[in-house]
Image 1 (cartoon, one colour):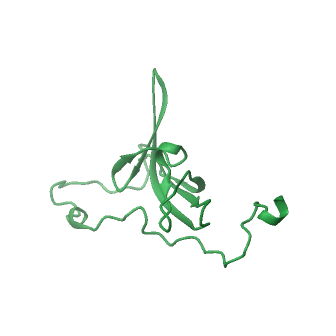
Image 2: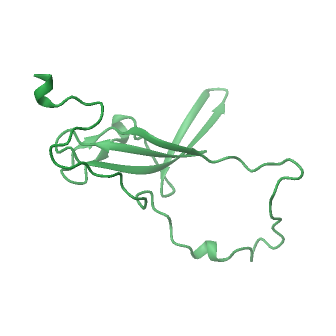
Length: 129
């Protein structure tokens, strides 16, 4: 399991935005499968046209690119590993059940470029012609 931040740049109005996705990989005899979710809801991969995110400014859909990734390790089972035994599951940390959902768009957005600034690695229209 991992948390991946996908960045989107609109090719129409050049607005930049990003969205966090939970990603799980599962392997079986049929191969390795990847599942993406946002706020607990399964969604198509943001790196494919089917999962392209709409631009919040103009509404055009754009495929994302991986901006950052944080693996979420599986719980360790080795002796001596720090952990807390749950003795009363029904009453263990009851505040978790009513805690607000940390939405996939709750993070700070990447710094916006000023008008006329060139994105790194991209040629300006004048340089291409």
